[in-house]
Length: 273
Ligand code: UTP
Image (cartoon, rainbow, N blue to C red; front, side, top):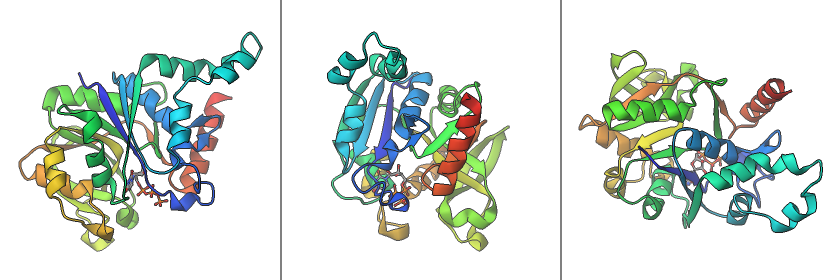
């Protein structure tokens, strides 16, 4: 039902400097695969076939990754190394990629608005590729959400329970459970201090958004950190009963932090060896 997936990938990735000086952090690999390829594979599994990528600097690396490298293909064709390209070839065959640039880094909400030109007027998924999710062979987190969308047809944010001490790193939601694992959102706060956090339900980098979000973002003033926050725009939508939070099944790694990145590397190494 939902065909397009937006990947905001324009952030500076300062926590990974100098690695991210000339390369977006979404190209950092967990084992041999860049973070953004894991994200694209998750989107394909959820039924998407159109990937819309919002880039900043380092655009070439992402574009080149999702393109055919004729020279490389020619070099390894018929050799024992050919299988290394099987997965990425499969990804390229299954979907199309389009790109736009976020000219100024004004926050995640602004990055999503920059993607409007690629999305148009239809519901869409959003993946922040630095949040790497795995559900051990079960439905991916985004698949669980697109399934839920069929029932509720409104904006959905994926949430997980965090240690409340870390509330200042996340958007936090509040609301009422309407079925197991599903909360009708009544309030959302971006990165609150622990004393101001209404719950420990933190938003992670998976969203389903309806296209009316674009008009709301356009009206959203800069919030926390002077950035245009998607959390603030979604709060506006929630006031009209249009947002639910979903406690997903699976594991999330915060690969935007060095600690989470190492944890993910160890996890996938154990899983794949
Ligand atoms: P982060 O908050 O992780 O910021 O962005 P960052 O700049 O990438 O990383 P640090 O904190 O400097 O290390 C969350 C997601 O939103 C995207 C990022 O690319 C990342 O996927 N983003 C953020 C944008 O695309 N544009 C922005 O202006 C801000």
